[in-house]
Image 1: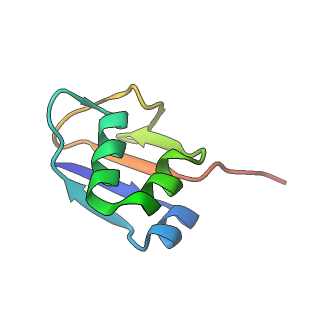
Image 2 (image 1 turned 90 degrees about the vertical axis):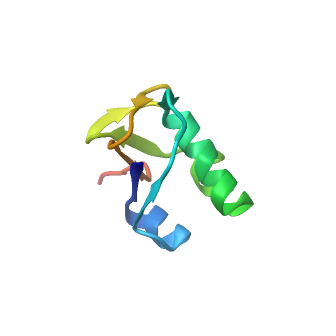
Length: 83
């Protein structure tokens, strides 16, 4: 199982703060995203794949190619702007 956590406006738009999913091994963040879209549908595609988001595995910033193993935490959050 992989723990998936959603932050800020992503959490609000998706209506969930976190969930656990089963992902085939070996896996990467792209596989996690694909699994989430398969589970939840087209709206999740628009929010998580078609728009820019930031991602982390075990609290380390990464891209979609980062490896994900059972027991890892994958986090998604919107780009941060400062001012």
